[in-house]
Length: 171
Picture 1 (cartoon, rainbow, N blue to C red):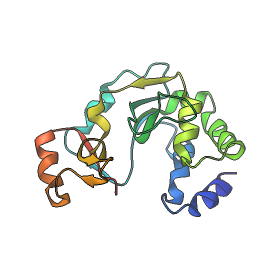
Picture 2 (picture 1 turned 180 degrees about the horizontal axis):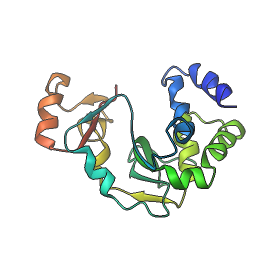
Picture 3 (picture 1 turned 135 degrees about the vertical axis):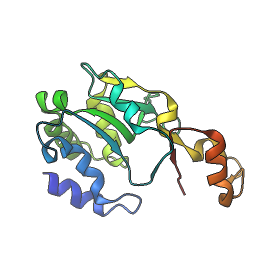
Picture 4 (picture 1 turned 60 degrees about the vertical axis):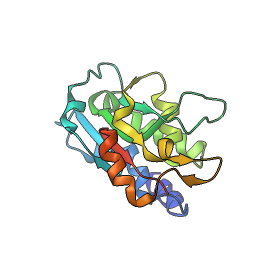
């Protein structure tokens, strides 16, 4: 089933097939590892990542940040799966990997892994401060005029001024 999901995702131009690996991370990581910080490949860290390990994930599958750019199927509360503090122990205990794979097979979505993760993690998430997954396009892109508010060359300078933990450049 995982191979089928990976094959399906490889046909989508805007994502890589590795997005589906988020579903099986608990099986890929040794059982002795109970916590994991997942970061998308286009993540820039601008702070101490270890502070994510200090958050209390008791009875929560993940610590995540609200995705301000999405409202899906009338669901106003949606998290971005690009940065997640994962409670592998609870995910394994409740066989969440299997549930994620089944969900993806039964309800394919253009939101790739994010749709399944939002639906399955549902009420077992801890909302984190937006500094952990700040998406540059949210603050520097003018959707009405379809343009960046500053030249793209200045994004790095702007990132330093924002002094946020994580930056995610889209586009």
